[in-house]
Image (cartoon, rainbow, N blue to C red; front, side, top):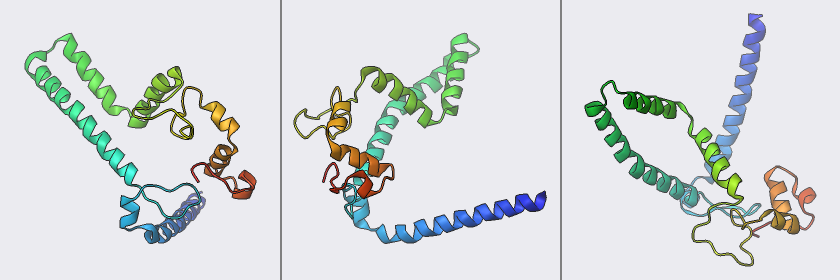
Length: 177
């Protein structure tokens, strides 16, 4: 039994090593200044980068730090100085322990369920509503109609799920191209 388990583990590690080596070999070719400082390109267009993802991560981290650090310091100092054995202090400690143990993706899905699903659209600050803007996140109050009416959207969505290009759209047209 131990031999079977060891063989399965070795087989899994060999496959993992093969996948990692392939990703590293192909990924090193794409790394460069352009990758870090350019915006992504539409599907099936070579090049592009992750500048918006890096900037978005930095902005979110900065905003979260600006909101959380003062509140955390005030709560910590207040509980240490005035909390003692009071019931409110116990509830604050319990809430901090629970929130510290929840992965951020769970919190994100929860907030998505509350804000997006209940309202039916994304928060679009600074976006215009007009022709051609329906490919933006949210797409307006009823973005499902745009997807059904525009075959380029369906082809792009299909490509994102791994549908071959010819099966997704014989004309090779994608949203954003």
